[in-house]
Amino acid sequence: MPRLQLPTDLPFEVGALYNRQRDVHDRLGGKRQGGIAPSTSTPFVILFTGAAGSQHGYRDHWEEEDGENILHYYGEGQSGDMRDSHGNRAIRAHLQQNRRLLIFQSLGKSKPYRFLGEFRFVHAYEEHDVPDTHGALRKAIVFKLKPIENDFSPFDKAIADSEVAQIDLSTTVSQQVREIRVKQSLFKRRLLNVEKQCRLTGVADLRFLRASHIKPWSKCTNGSERVDGANGLLLTPHADLLFDRGWITFENDGALVRSGQLPANVSSRIGLNLTNGRRCGGFDEKQKAYLEYHRNAVFETTFEKMEDPLSDLITLEMI
Image (tube, rainbow, N blue to C red; front, side, top):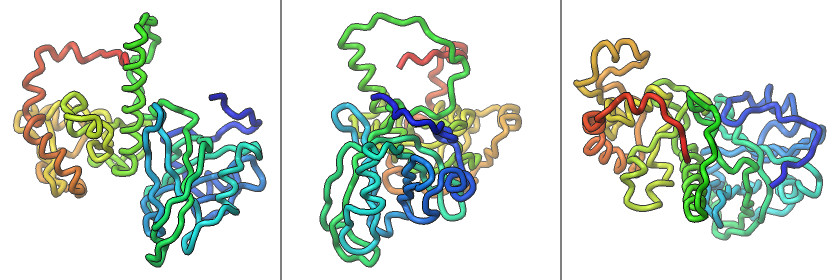
């Protein structure tokens, strides 16, 4: 899908954090409150998503459709039926008006916004019996938005990012690789609706984080577990390594558990607060089920099965 040819370069990087007023509206215009902000001074329609929208019946979510990840984005209108006007009309007509859709995620009151990227309108549908701000059931307009960037990967780039020689893959293998990429991207996008930052460091900029499965991809019993946002944590690379290999885990109440086999010199030098029992935020019921698996099958188990630690020092991502 070709990118819209407009003269204005995006002043944002996917995954990075920005101040809504200073970095977004001062640069691009658009109303400074609300979820949909068409600009009258620049060719952009700026959209905002976040957990706070649930109080108005907005339930933005990701689905895989025909091999692509699609964001279902709820239109504006806090009370009564939503109407095809104002901000909602701006989304639907952005291609005809030669405007670009940019989406930012709210991380909470008085916190920065995370840039999720550029999107394109695909389709809109009506959903009935959606509660409004006062709890009354109404008709909602839901937009299907396709990200311009299909492979969502703002997370921690690989250390060695040099090009790998092209491998001649069969049609079947190529299809499998593409399907895995789509599912991995869907998992990452859904994870952002569950976790906002690294629980050990507080880092929220996706460029310095990794999307880590709680129950490993290879151990998931079905496809839904692999793409379930509740089956994941946002972690900085060193925290991800400790969690992925079972050196640390979490209790259901968020208490950190450190393996007694973690060398003291590593614990003191790695730059993380690994105090046993340290509270790192609570988990919802779905996350608790995955954490139970991690405590029983990954913690103090995975690192003991590593036959050759050197083999994992340098890796090249093939998918």
